[in-house]
Image (cartoon, rainbow, N blue to C red; front, side, top):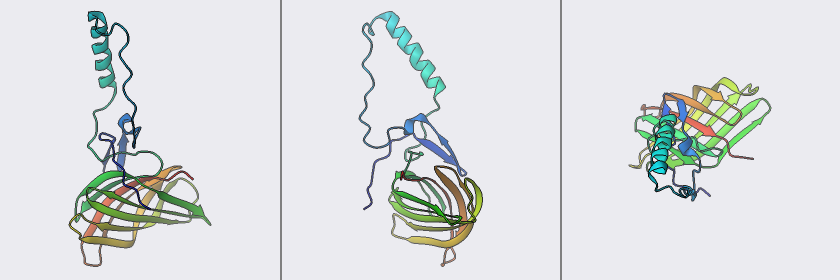
Length: 190
């Protein structure tokens, strides 16, 4: 069934549907790698100065860590940003189904983050490979306070890549509330 996995802090930033990834997202779950031991003589003043210079250069080359719960995480993952009527943001490793055939693209996944569960699907007709398409999006949010918000077959523009895609959406629920946000996904490996 569904597995919950911890997400390493500082993976990526999701801004207006644009996902900016950092190297911190590698080794998503069960990462037990340790930093290599210091080289012999690392306690000498020359080695200490060299080590400090190397660390400063490395930190200048790599962007600052992003907020916890964000990231791309590789195959089988969702980055979720719901902005209305509740605020939910995070990243989850989860099975992501991406099916193509008969000129159709269908993606679906369920992920839990921040105490909420988000179930979503994207359907594209006239699919002919990676690109931007009009789509129908279904999103259901079970918020941490047990409130449920859902939109079904809401029109949206979706960008599909070789390995996943992203969608920004905003539609009214049956109760008239606006459900808005963005979701990026990476398809599970076949």
